[in-house]
Length: 162
Image (tube, rainbow, N blue to C red):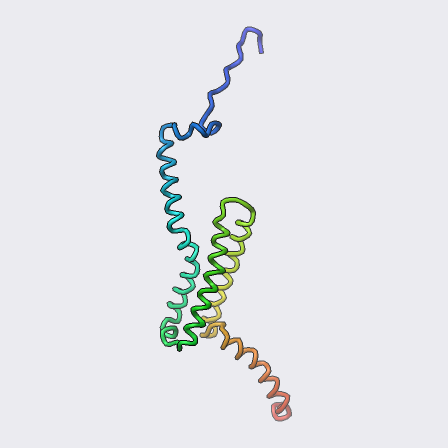
């Protein structure tokens, strides 16, 4: 730099460097007004959105086996209701953890949510499309007793089988 040249003056502070002045800038009030509306909507509907995965599961169940659900005896309606409650606790807490504003745990919760929700809903839909039943207590009891029954029958009557 030559001695005759003068140093350039420092640039004025911008809104990015001085956030306290951002609200007085043109359009700043509109920007924060929109954020306030978003905040009010988040407070109003946030809990309901946390239950959206449970609603997806129930709607999927109704679409797949609505007629069978309507004919359930009271014992199974209670069992189904408890399963929906348990499901809402799991998916709701994972969704609330995903909605955290800071921290690594929200990312862990988001990954867990995607993997678990996809595996549970997809697995349930796949099992029903393949076997026309759900993986519930009755199907589990049949599956575990079926293997024992086959091996028991073969050991008792194996000489006639071969």
